[in-house]
Image 1 (cartoon, one colour):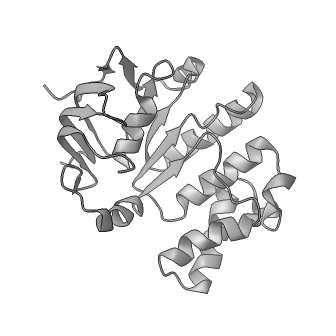
Image 2 (spheres, helix red, strand yellow):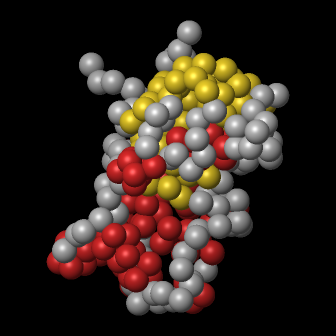
Length: 228
């Protein structure tokens, strides 16, 4: 039997001195697709940021991909993040670099050879349907295309888990649906996904879904894998 890739037990999440989510306990297993829902300020982004060690765990226990967040040293954080992909609402592309260059520096930073980099970039862009945009600058792309580049970037290291923070928040409904279908395709390929979203209509795309709802400093989970 496989082990959970995310395990929180009685964890308190605090982006500042104020605890925004308290006594959080849950497990996420390989192949899960988790929707993290809740109003603005309810703790969705803070929970994601804790999982990729952008903010420290306030207290309690948390393990992600085998890394203990309660005692994770700063020098180990890049090792954790190499095994995950992160997609943001505002894309976070470098606007003075082409699509290829936005992806190139990610792989260069982990020491890949040029041949491997070129192959991985091509494969990632094919995956998101942008192979013909490789030499474009971000400002030449639509919002949906920019988000697809961001998703391609997140896939470069074949992540075990993909974290998406409101990835369709800046897109019109038709493009948002297209981006959501892309995430669904990635999930069907075996990648575990945790997605924070305000768009509850996306929940209907899944016959089997797990929903984590942030509200009133608590995390309510509709899931068979809740830690007691």
